[in-house]
Length: 152
Image (cartoon, rainbow, N blue to C red; front, top):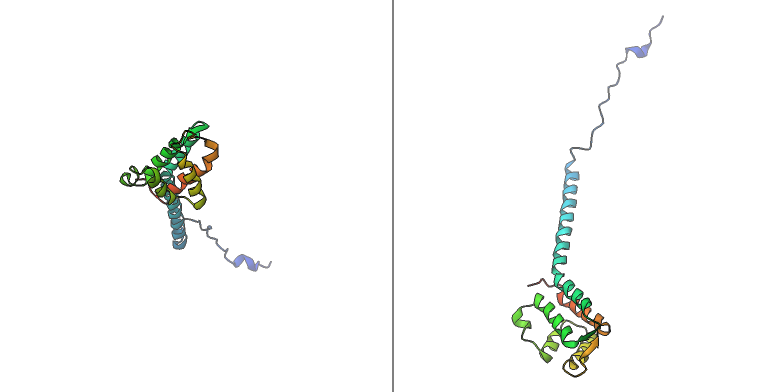
C-alpha cells in the first residue's frame, strides 16, 4: 500500500484574527480629534445659548404683554435688554432723541423709520398701540441688540 504524500505535510496553523484594539496611531488621533470637535461644539453652543438669554427673556416678556400696550413699556423692554449687553453708564441716561439715535445703530433703515414714528407718539394721548402691529419690529430690535455681544 502506498502512503499518501499529503500525510507527510504539516498542517498550516492559523493565528486568531487581530482585534480592533489597540487602535493604530492614526486612528487614535482621529478619534481624539473627533472628541475634541464634539466638546468644542458643545462648548460653543452652551456659550451662545447663555449669551442669548437676555434676548430670550425679553422676547418671552414681550409675548406676555397684553394686546394693547403703552409705547413706553415697549421702549423700557428694549432698554432693559440693552442694559444686559451694554454698560449701564452708556444706556441708562438715554431718553428721547438720544435713545432713538443710539437704538438706530442696531436697526436697519426700515426699522428706524418705524421706530421713530412709534417713538414720536410715545408721550401723546394715543400712546397705546397694538402689540401685534409692532411685534416683529421689537423682536428684530431685541435680536440685533444681542448679536455678537456677551452680556455684561
